[in-house]
Image 1: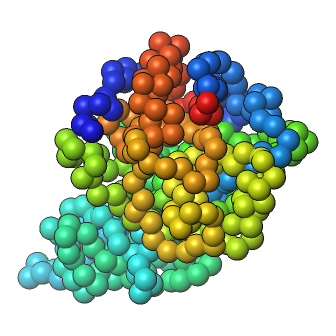
Image 2: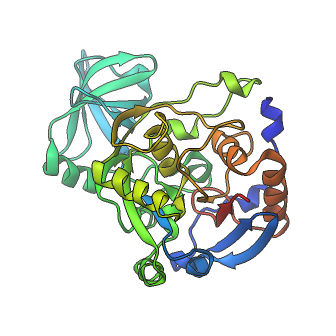
Length: 349
């Protein structure tokens, strides 16, 4: 299975830099069996059945991009350097792994100041990353980070424009609860309260799980034999209540449809034993054609970039030839791609 098998021509102007407004006005490509239908996200209740269950990732994206300064004494007096930091993931010891630019201007033991309230000590510099320990924890850290930080837009958007205040709303789901992600579960960005109410009225139920999406989600595949690619690890949790809800839906004949690849990867991680069960820990599950799905009966997801692990995931669900047809249709009909783009509802035959 070659990386080139997952390539296609994507016009640059189809990568969205802003989301549709309102959220549920984004376009929705529905692929059901052999058919493709062009719809709108607010039509989603029409495509689901009473008894279906949507699985939602309730992670909250933190404003992980920080700009700060470090000071150092020299023979000529204090010297200041500007440092740009992108938080990657919380560490088990309470610190954070981060990218820092320029890393060469930092030494272990120094402090970076981000605001009058927020600073971090550099504990370790290793493997191109800095391990930081902030001066605040808990709600105090969250509040100071919200003031000092910017949303960590995907590199494909950040290359086109900087993050701004609007992104703090746009790049967050309406049900975001548990802080820790540095990238959004972007299929979930299409939902607003009116759509959730319409789905509930249709008889669709919801289960919340948590997967803290890491920056590794944007890492390119660099091996030609995709089966040798090593996935990044991300922390997730499927509670006992969530596992029971999903199992009950399966037993009753309803469909379990994750919203987003993160929710799908998490529930399939929790079902490695053969059926869904409570689960907590780090998952590096890599889903590519040949994968046996144990829980997901479909998927709502955005349109993914060529040669990405997410394109491999949807190919595993729908089949490689079918995904080529779907994506050719999406490009020809000018669907908007990636994090702020349009959505697809993928329902295998």
